[in-house]
Length: 502
Ligand SMILES: NC(=O)C1=CN([C@@H]2O[C@H](COP(=O)(O)OP(=O)(O)OC[C@H]3O[C@@H](n4cnc5c(N)ncnc54)[C@H](OP(=O)(O)O)[C@@H]3O)[C@@H](O)[C@H]2O)[C@@H](O)CC1
Ligand SMILES: Nc1ncnc2c1ncn2[C@@H]1O[C@H](COP(=O)(O)OP(=O)(O)O)[C@@H](O)[C@H]1O
Ligand SMILES: [K+]
Image (cartoon, rainbow, N blue to C red; front, side):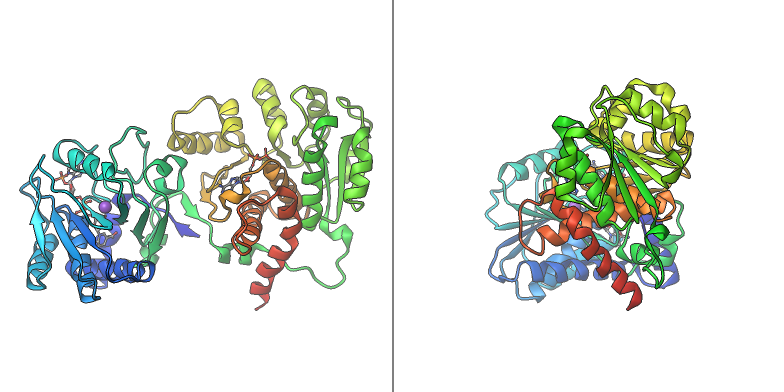
């Protein structure tokens, strides 16, 4: 796991690294600038492009000055620097780099508030303000940023787009210098992982600047980014002599006549993710489709809205909700009355839960809910920002002793203990119907295979996204369908297990 930290904590790490490595702060700035330039050179190999580096007078600006000098040393000749000296204050490392810039004969001008020259460069490097932002942009900075946004050039931001808060509620009307790419130092900033940042930046990459990792990992933060090695550590390869009884029996309660696909998707995904036995509880019209699509899955046939007699005890775990319809309360009540082990609730199970809040008392501890944003707000009330959703998830997971999987580009898994894990896998080719049903099946499958529910959520979310990445990115495919992701899971899982064995 990579611990994700606030800008205030990043400043602590900075100070700690400077005093313990030890390294002079201006040398750390040089290292950060070199890391930026190294990525930039690979990304923009054409040395003839014209580049304007806009610098503030803090350390982000200091980085900008060092970057301009280093780019010139890397044969980018078409480079100039615009310094926004809108206050009397400049940091010492800015001043040192200003001297070095002049020594290297990189051309520069100092901008005057309200009188900005025409910008003809191909690329703008934004080194105006970074993680030191402590108030919304106003005055000359705001005017400059609006001016640069209006000319619609390619913008590469140093560490943080100027004006964007790195954590806390992002004001959707904030004045931010919109970046095509952010080359950020050491860690993704928390707000980069929340959807509101998409209005201000298209993409980001993280470059290592050699800060003290041990110190970062021991900082007090409940935010973590999942890494593949965590998943490799968690998976358990199958052993000789294990049989279907070893891997549990999952029941999925899903589907109605018109949404049978959801039941087929979640139950087939459970089977592909390796559960020993899968049963799906569906209405009769789905039986032929089920048997022809995936004969390995068994069926319990029900009246559309009524549960038949079920031997509840034989199931290790039950997943419910995909395609169930909002008027299937009798099915949910039967589930809660009879089954006391972890359940996985998704889709219409969550929509019904939001209208039957007394059900919460019957949901076993360590159960998992997998809402997308609308389902999340139906359950816990309307939110105006994702930052607030993070806080609500933490509070609700603790109060209800459940695991909340809030689905998105970077799906966030919140545990009852208050940890919040961001998942890095997955891509927009996966934004198609049924994808969540597959995730429900995968997570249910891992619980059946005796992974602890939080492990099953982490493993399931990571693998689901990774399978989608393999299908979309490796094949340059712009759309991936849910059934393809389900079928890809065993292949993706095998690659993860191979790393464990290797
Ligand atoms: N460990 C790392 O990651 C490393 C980080 N490094 C780099 O340091 C950067 C952080 O530098 P930084 O702390 O000097 O802050 P920066 O963003 O340049 O702002 C400067 C000053 O602007 C002010 N200010 C704030 N808001 C404002 C506003 N709205 N409008 C106008 N002014 C405003 C505020 O001063 P104040 O007004 O509070 O006196 C603030 O202090 C970081 O992003 C990275 O690029 C690397 O060099 C080395 C390793
Ligand atoms: N842009 C994206 N990046 C990563 N994952 C995505 C993206 N779009 C969708 N997904 C994943 O697809 C799933 C969609 O779930 P959901 O909205 O419940 O779909 P459905 O209701 O159609 O089954 C989630 O797991 C989500 O994380
Ligand atoms: K910046």
